[in-house]
Length: 110
Length: 112
Image (tube, rainbow over all chains, first blue to last red):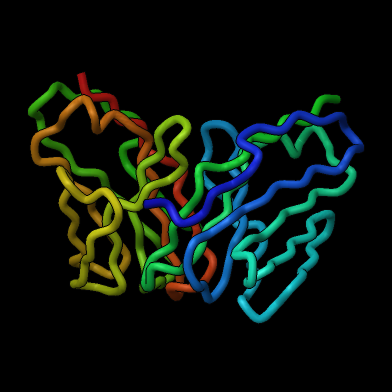
């Protein structure tokens, strides 16, 4: 079964607004990663947060991790049309492999 | 560097045919993975490898076989293709099982 579950499944916002996506998982993890996928392309790594970290920033991205609730959020600030993509969380809870959720499809309208 | 390269990018098969997808990485990564992506399902792990000569099953291994004879290559085989295997297949590699995954651009397979 999939380890991560993203919420919402789809999100549509205006350029300049912030976008927040959430990920819930089921078991203990070493780290949680967020990936981005443009339509028809492979996934690209955005950010990794370790289980002993609570928040991490990278440019316009902010990721939080709450291990007590087994959840993470990805915030994209001041969104741009180019941020339109699907976003996935992935965890390593199953040992030697990484498992992904179904993703959040973000549309940023110009 | 090319990163992770998948071949072929597109393939159409008839039910019962066999084929092999090739994944090659030039980053000297130990870990390699094959995922399939279906609409609304996200990515599901088929098989993975933690090093040359090793393979292991993922979430949805049935109907697929893999081999890792060389560290840089990870092959995914379909012995007898079925319409349910119509999907986009992604290969990924990583330096460790907790590290960043590097993905190929995908192979779109249609089974008629």
